[in-house]
Image 1 (spheres, rainbow, N blue to C red):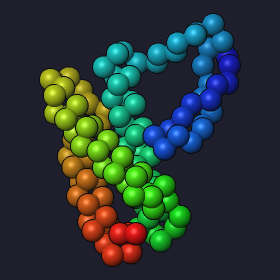
Image 2 (image 1 turned 135 degrees about the horizontal axis):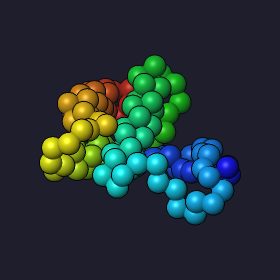
Image 3 (image 1 turned 120 degrees about the horizontal axis):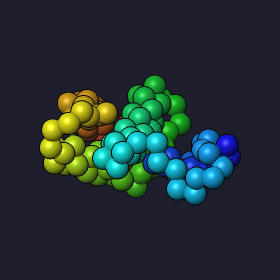
Image 4 (image 1 turned 90 degrees about the vertical axis):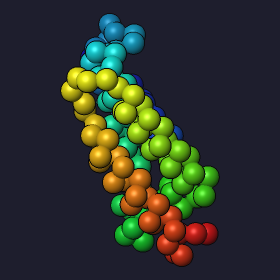
Length: 113
């Protein structure tokens, strides 16, 4: 096994473990790998939105990051809605709920700066 570094949606480094012989590890089929990446981005954005809602320091305090995250959520919805059939790792309804929550907090006067 080898330890390598990955980057989350906001560019923060995290550790990941993969077989030492695997130069390009894939743990899921191609479609599931894509959905797993989407799921990770949604998780990262939701975590930062939770921090923002709790009045903590968040990556979403920056207008540029807020816009980038909002665009990513909308892109994820389009990708999920374009996926025909099969099982989903990420429910589009959950992403829609997160978008609504995101917009509600973005419209809040405490976040507008």
